[in-house]
Every structure is written in C-alpha cells, then in structure tokens.
View (cartoon, helix red, strand yellow):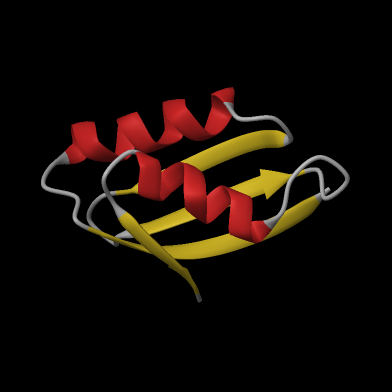
Amino acid sequence: MNKLKLSINGMHCSSCSLNIDLDLEEAPGIISAKTNYAKSISEVEYDSAKTSPAKIIEVISSTGYTAKLI
C-alpha cells in the first residue's frame, strides 16, 4: 500500500470533494481517498500493483478537476 498527496484545483464546494472521493474509490487499486475542499488536497491510499499516480491523476482529471503531486 502506498500513499499519495495531491493538490486539487477547480473545486467549488464540499460536494466537489465528495465527487472526487467517490470516483477515486471506484477506480481499480484505490484503497481509500480523502479530499479536503478547504485545503484543496486529496490524500489517496493505493495498491501500486494495480494503479499508479499518473492513473490516479487521470481519474481526477476525468471528473473535471486538475491534480498534481505535492
């Protein structure tokens, strides 16, 4: 299990952070996702055998937000 911290741009409310978490948790290899709207940060636990940081960023991008590693 690996952990990843991302800076998220484009969120407008706490529902945005919930949408990101739900989409991430449905993606293969994601163990947990906690996105904080107020801090614009997402912390993700994932299985590196099933996904990668690049794929995690792609999932977030597909929901309409931008993400980068911190």
